[in-house]
Image (cartoon, rainbow, N blue to C red; front, side, top):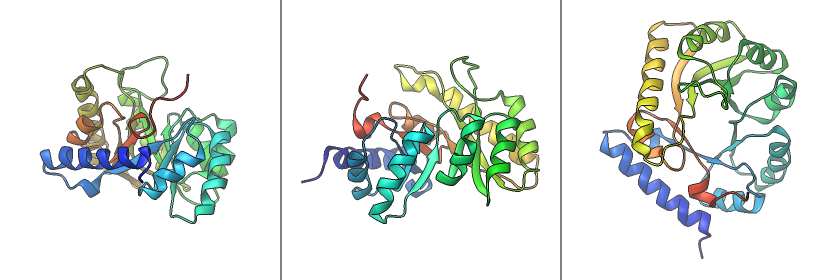
Length: 231
């Protein structure tokens, strides 16, 4: 009998397909990242059995334990860091994760570059609403940061990430997703060496369909898979 997580993942994949086809995109262009902050390994294993291969973690220490346990499954799993990364955690982060989605300063970028033994994929986090409670750079700073990251031999800049304000009506998130796509296009036109604006990580459980319509290639879904997190 399929687990609750497996049933939810099936529903989400159907929603991804509908949203993609609505705007003439291929569903395979979109990566479903399971956001697993506070989610136990047993439920993550259920997600793996249902075909999830990309997980997003917010804390280095929590991820370290889970990665060790899940890697016993011998599945081809990729790990993304999606939280606020402190520079003193960079050494561990480059060993644990395949992608750091939340680079928001040249200081952090340089620390990651220094600690990485081989190239690691990164995204620049952009705070489009300029919310003080969230990390991320402004649109102007994103272009400057992209140029600086391009000079760092161990970082491979793949695109942008954003977390818009929460709205009950997911349609209200659309302007932020549109803006991130336009910013990526602007950076792409700069033809900066070693910078590939391939990925847009945007959209969560309540608004990922809107994000897909606006060009998301990575959606970060937690609650819609695993249910509400314990308070």
